[in-house]
Length: 472
Image 1: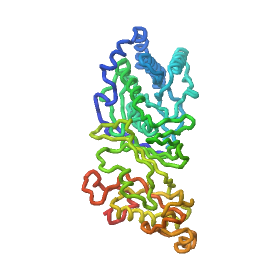
Image 2 (image 1 turned 30 degrees about the vertical axis):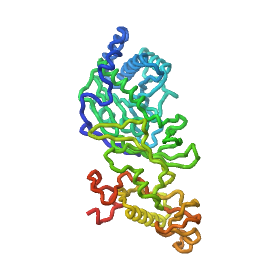
Image 3 (image 1 turned 90 degrees about the horizontal axis):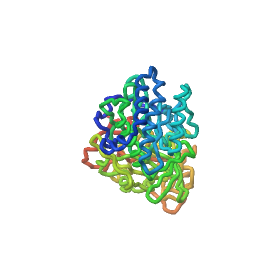
Image 4 (image 1 turned 30 degrees about the horizontal axis):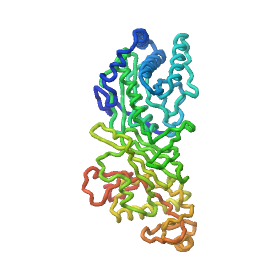
């Protein structure tokens, strides 16, 4: 199971105004256009929330309050993409490929005006008849790839810690969003939260439920969040997590299998196929600190072709996605596409095969050093078993030994069918042989030898992969 880290209040940047909320002036016309009948209805709902004796009794009036305000905001927009706030019954959302099992009380998603009106009607009927069963979502229930924002309603402060984790999960699964905005509510009011790869923020004030202006600012902020999403990513509802990625002039169908926290590089990795030439690919999407002097693509270009090192297909920073800023940092979104396919080291079929991989990794790192680059982050995730090792290849180094398949079998076979370590400098250009068993990737933390840049002078890596001389 994916372990959630508790993001306690000391992890937040306290702020009077969240960076991604629209200004009061820009939303004020929307607020002043509230009709008296609607304003009266909203006021009654806010009173119901405050006077509800139990947490679950606040769910319906809060959902009605938010959805009626969202409907009002949608009536002033030209598109038919309103935000709906859905009460989320017990089951986790589909597409939880990291097995987080988190269950927000409510989630926001984009819908149509007709769908929003139908849901408001269902909520009103359930409240009027005092039904204990909440309206069923059916096909309207979003997958994580469609969740725009999580909301959590609690009687105690614990809701604020939960919303931090929910924001983190939402940002992980919504690879197309630059940031997410969440709400943690209690009977007495609500706080707003925001998370981007640069910063996590919490409003320093708890707003009462009858502060309709602030609620409208939050809702319009969600509209803006949706409009600012990455146009190069498209979620496919045909699967719980499937995406179409457009990288420059190429298009890929991919399925994610790994991701890191929303605060930081927010790396997201998916495997799939090119829709242009039908080749298998792995795509890594991450938010890179602009202070990094040499990005990952430059490092791959500097090193060139090395047997056992991932082969770069494309490194691209989309010009139609704005950088995110916050916490004295600025990050830009980057796509890395490779045709190299790696398997976890746990897939090694024998100790002999595992040791062969480790020996080949040492040769890869040695070759990188000779070409002026230190990897600096050798770990379980960055050292893999080469899936293509068992497939013939026309690559000049193929089995990694520099010999033909027949020569390798004769000279390097250990008697069990396992190949020995390869010599990266000894290559043949004409024979079809096998690729190395090892596959080394992820040059995020790499640095040029002799670099004096202080931004990457800290020691990094996984201890069991670091030699004792450097661990002292």
